[in-house]
Image 1 (cartoon, one colour):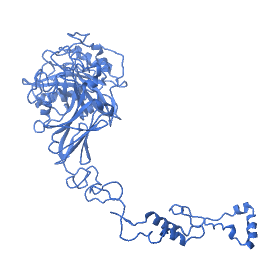
Image 2 (cartoon, rainbow, N blue to C red; image 1 turned 180 degrees about the vertical axis):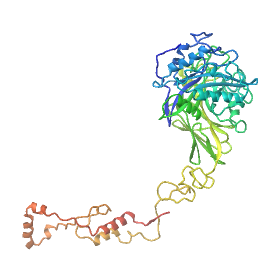
Image 3 (cartoon, rainbow, N blue to C red; image 1 turned 90 degrees about the horizontal axis):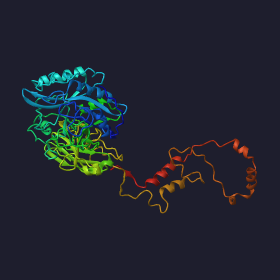
Image 4 (cartoon, one colour; image 1 turned 60 degrees about the horizontal axis):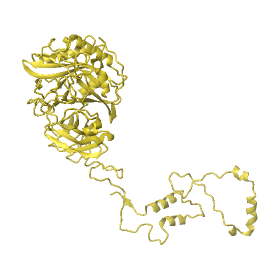
Length: 573
């Protein structure tokens, strides 16, 4: 059956920095799963309607959502017709033009020779036409509801074949730290298909960060937490962070209510945020690329974009989810930013590394920073942004099951690796005196340029021209009230031939015109000539204009002006 619903636009997406941030739920169940419910398919408690599951996601402010009903399992497996309906519903609800993306998928249980390997969220990113022939058996690692795949190699082969047949796929480990229903044994980890991990859901917090925040309800299983998985001295896996609700009542994205079908799950769940470059379209491919590149955030609910930057010695090293190449022994500068208007909701921002939590300094305007020394910048670094839930949700509140109203947004980690100590290739390391390892023109020993405001040679200052007393009297002194400039002009005073303004290099050649003599100085016998000259027609004078002449005193004018403006000799420091 095909469900057609009126489409409405989602408005959660937000531009910030270099990216547009989109919010979604990557883990939602409906009545198609044997352990879940929908009001129109059968429900124990208060469920949403199957036909409205994507519309509910829009109403909750989401930009994308995945339907992930069980493809295999002991009791919760979906029916063939139900899974086909899921893919049809996903196709009908996809609305790229309106800004809402559907992702078809399934949940897969894994065991190897009786050992629990964990659960995976299968997401499929090909276009709907390419997925039109999918069957339930095609979504099952063994071609049946059996959860035991036999070996890690068999799991890898199934995933590889699935991608080759149906296009881009991902398999997200979820609730990895729980004891019930299944922890994650990381032995079968597949880096190609598992670039991100669901760190938070209605099961609780699987990070294993030691904070006690929303600990998983069934207890942490040893060796299965996210921190243990990404420990460089242990498994050394590299994954980005995402979150989902794992709701089993057809209410995707509803982080402020508890699951009415699986009431043992005590939390409201979380959401995934993907950072897409501003100039890229928003579609399934953009979501896939963001997850592969670890450009993701995990949030317990608040829709807040978070930017993180890593630098060292003035050199930009990495951004969200990127590998951090850090020279041995150098400090790591970390900066976190959110939109300034959202800053009042933040309690504090903490940088988390292997075994270390460092509270960042607030810079104002939605920015925080800190510097990690070489003993702290180990393994990985991610930001944990603590949000005041009471303030964020206001009078509406949020019944998310937590022991307090604290909320979190976690950035994906930047994984730290030691690299060569000369990041800008200028031949000088920070340890050897490079004050900006991101600019090859700045280093100890570089030629300094005076007065340009830049410290090229890294000595802590920029030389400028300054007045220096040479121990002799200035040239303008020793001439009484008359300085050298005035004397130079006086020596060449030709009755008004010199104009003090004509001292610039770009001045037009001056027209030398004699000064008008005072009428009292004109001899009486010459007065007639003067009257006769004055009576000449104006047009005769206009007909023969004086030809421009080079000012022979221009050089001396410049000398005079220069002496007047400087007074003292100057030299470089």
